Length: 288
Image 1 (cartoon, rainbow, N blue to C red):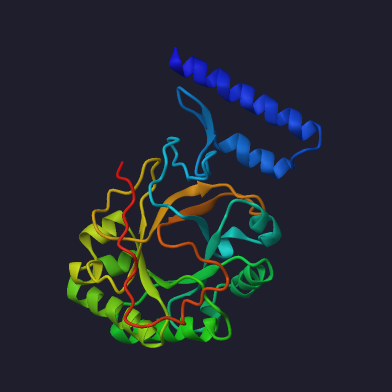
Image 2: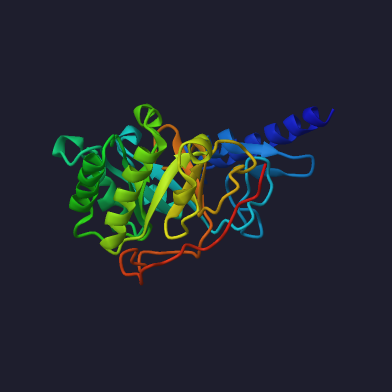
């Protein structure tokens, strides 16, 4: 019975939005986002991963995400041409942009890196960076450091530089080797006075990344776990990647969504202009 009532509420909301579209009050692309993500509880209709009337972010179940201060996306060439003006007009507060992958070779630069950075800079969207790691040795980790530093030169970052650790070949490395690789990267970036962090999914944080890294509060932690409630990661972290199935006006197809748990940042914040060592805020998100 409750499901039937919820379906009626959802259909009514969609008919209402359709009427607005016909009247010219909302774009077709915005309607597709809203219609796809509108959901219901027993008490009300809400939009997943958006703000409620009190200005607090809601998870996929319509519950407040405690401590979340900003909503972000992470993008790469796989997201294609992005209309950053439309993104800026949406409820997205920041972006984490892939600069490339692996060794410092120009053909391994993300082909949309420059375009995405310009889009953020032109539209006053705070942004950070990630590089997808293939490093199997300390020397390759050093090359990935050089890769990032080459591409961020001349740009003001507002969020950390993240090392994306999830490659299957790296999972087969001895933990000591993987630890040396990660430490080589984060220390080198840190020594250049940038905020730096590690991205990994819950399985990697739990089973592959050494506790000496996970418990080091100098490094920012970005945890991926896709569900409607929150991540079950028990450590300290500052960003949660909640889904790869998000929709944002200005981006064709699906996009990763994230929530930031630190103080609100804008383009005036310089993620390199920091006093080191710096410790990220000790915040955690709600557990599922």
